[in-house]
Structures are given as C-alpha cells and as structure tokens.
Length: 78
Image (cartoon, rainbow, N blue to C red; front, side):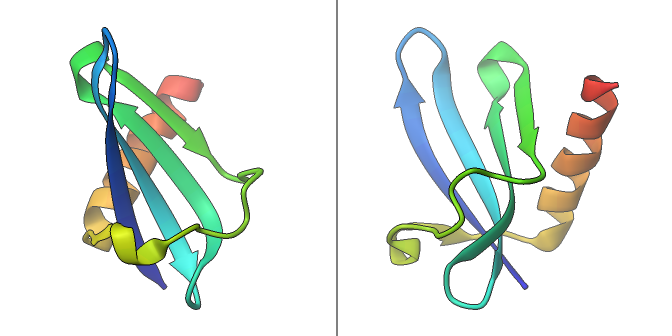
C-alpha cells in the first residue's frame, strides 16, 4: 500500500489537496480531498475513479497523514 498526494489551486477557495490510498501501481482504494483554507474535508471510501492517472506527478505522503485525515472525515460525516 502506498499513499500519494496531488494539489491544485481552486479559485476563491485556496489550495486543494487530494490524497490517494494506492494498491499496486495505480489502483485507487480510497481518496480524500482537503481544502484547509475553507475547512473542507471529503472522504471517498469507494471512489468512482479506480485508476490514478499519471501517479508520477504525485508526491509520496506518510500513511499516518492519510489515516489521520480519514478519521477526521469520518467524524465530520457523522
């Protein structure tokens, strides 16, 4: 299992970070989207997109960060 992150600017919201839990080279198991400036956090336990496009453009992140954000997202959801 590996964890990757991509980022992009969202107009009028700030930076958006998407974290992926990856199996193999590019199979997405779960994903998280976070926009810290807007205090937005969305978790996707069964993402529609199943294959990560251009994983080489993402940066590696620690599993602890992913799991911490996932837990926060589950709390916000309930």
